[in-house]
Image (tube, rainbow, N blue to C red; front, side, top):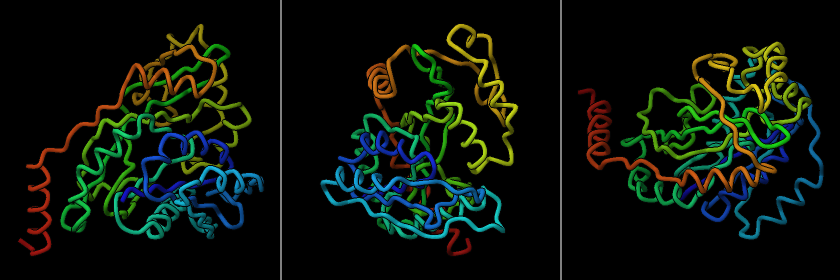
Length: 288
């Protein structure tokens, strides 16, 4: 089964764009919400009652579960709170292909991603023998400008699917072998209104690493000067080497246009790799 978990907070309206890409191709969806409406930094947020009504309306297959719990411990750092919540959500989701998405991550052409996972279902039969983390590639939206979006396309990978959820930091688990699927995920990370950007920096898991001075830089970038900026990631400069521009009227048009230009073509995982991985796991468990 393909199961998807979302961690919902102050930017919850974006989940509907993300759900629209995956809903028809997954078996179960868990939406995690802090019971006290707190972010990982301890700040509070409001969740409109209409949110639950809209979720119920679109859940025609009855595959969505709302999971509320205390996901913010004051004694933990924002990143530690994020990692803790992800592990709690994974435990609630059960076995299978477990995918965790942020509400601003949109996997267009998800039928291809689902087919890729189902082709490797054997890895979920005895997951402790064949643990795997699948990584995807972010197409990061950096800024919404009047005539379109500025975005980064630099093969920045991130972990988002596993059969053995034991997250060490956010969605990362370096102890488990990984395979780069080349599944493209549009990430509406920084393409938000200025108020949303400030709130993002104040509340996300990286809030201790990113400061408001980066927001001041972000304000200066537009569709006229974007080509002049190089190596501008807020924490690891070379990760974002340059900006691209796609003219469009909104996020739906961006997704549609980008999907047409870049159809999903997941990179296969050779059977020999699976066999070698299983053999290594057996030897490790036997102490050989």
